[in-house]
Length: 82
Image 1 (cartoon, rainbow, N blue to C red):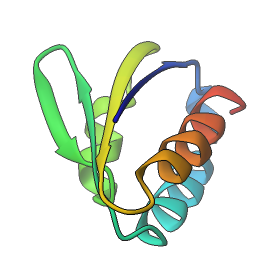
Image 2: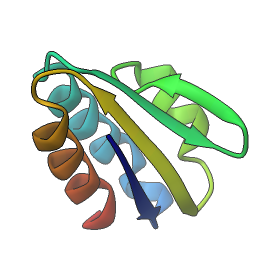
Image 3: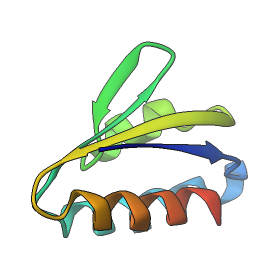
């Protein structure tokens, strides 16, 4: 399953959003990745997340597993409401 999110995280909130996102992603059993500009990282990796979220704009989320739909909905919500 795939979903696109538009990320507009203010720089002063990046650490807080990263913590919430990683905690939520780690609660799902599905394999989840985030991609932007040809780079793809594990969505459960803090360093990977931070490396892609420095800039504003679109990211692609992909999830495979039994709770993929729920994972994408929750994680997209975190990114788009930051």
